[in-house]
Length: 297
Image (tube, rainbow, N blue to C red):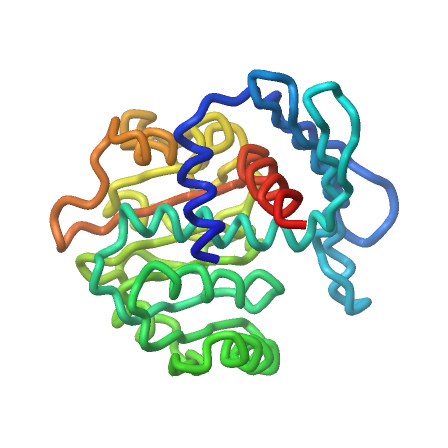
């Protein structure tokens, strides 16, 4: 994970060609099924394309909701690798949040709250613990059995960290230094009135204008950063919904990851400020991580 975070930091300092993400609806199932195509290329023509499926009804079958494959291309357009895109997505999502945390969370952050119990939860915990001296991770989920399972997974990866099930979300959030939401909720779970001064809020679960993990008070109380402006202003319901209703304006967004790592915008300044990072994912991350993996093989 430390190598991944540094890899993404270097990637966001460079210029890339990133065509818009394409989303197609697929037939079948009891919920909305999607196919996502996410390409990214460097200025010499080498690149990668990720194809991802989102099948919400897979939960009942014991299968991942999101599955993906990544094809890596050389500068001559030759396919040179096929990678498990699901694992790459989990790794790069965690690494991107850790990169944001490096600039936006308090350096003395010790308590992380993870909201969501899906496959992404352990990766988010590992990522945040990589860049901050986290001593305690609290996990909250709608179903206690899923929270217990997530806690066990996180403990296996972080044996030196205390990991517990959050029985009262409001109380856990109030004590947290970092709050990470990794859900596909269509209605807000996290309330701004729960947040204590100095909290870093990391929203990674939703990538649809129809989904929200946080309420209006969260965005109103926070300085706001995003992974990319284009992605956030097309897909991030936590940003688009309050924008549409005039709760915030585009000027409320202080910067994106590229501006942060290039020093064009200021990250955390005051210890007591609440800072929100909203990520919907970008093919830049997929390409950078895929190349790092291919180079290591």
